[in-house]
Length: 348
Image (cartoon, rainbow, N blue to C red; front, side):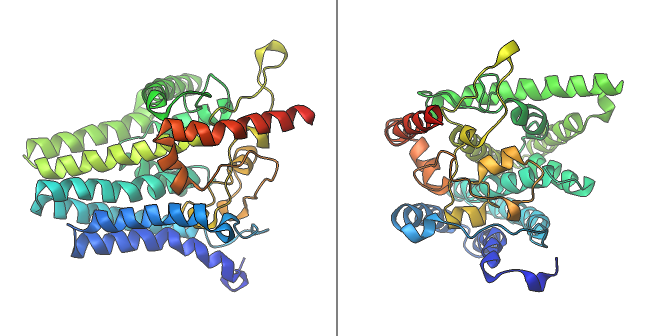
């Protein structure tokens, strides 16, 4: 598809590279104020999407392929530059600046870096999958590259899936369960894959990326670069927190029925929460059209569709992340929607 055939509305996806570019500029020019700007953007998006009805609907999907996925590849370079700038600023800054930079950069590497890694990892090109491994390695979470594609997509919305939150389970109870469960599952799945290929662990990207992470952290510690190390670990931890909070939101309280032989029913639109809020979708490569993604995992993000019969979140991910962090508020808003979705499903 030629770039000239893109609709004007598709330019909204440029937000996916504008936000990291603005963050990079802030880290380079005003590292002591970067966190203020990042939080203002995040909370501003959450407020706008919750209060302005016009922002609750994204444009319709593209029907054919487009050059938009190139934005994901461009982002990889921006993230590398952002991390380099963050390390330099952390080395020269005070401890409060180091902490602020960790959260600022982690907002980008988590909200967008992991989201774009997820999209690249679903691509068919080997180069895109290599970029996905790189992005996940930069936040110290390479196990996602195994568990998500070979574990979560098979078991989503079942209690066998460590990334599916159960009704009544708070985010803070979910986090240790999913972190431990996903780590164990990833290494088990990788061991199964290598056994099937009759290959050794030398052929495992999971092993090599994990070792590279350990070596990098050890090198920073050996060099006495404590501020840089603290920045690196903090941005990684915050990025992973954002990932697992989104995992918590995406299938919270939804469960596939178990059929004959103990096998779950096929995944359907009713097994993932959706939100069509335009700003969050533009920043996150249509991730909130999550039901269509699970049903058509190889579909590029510009072609993902809004699914009306899927359960709908009270607002976009920008706001839902904040709501999920306060369990009573999250339960009060989402549990009635679970009951309504279950009632509608039983009628059908």
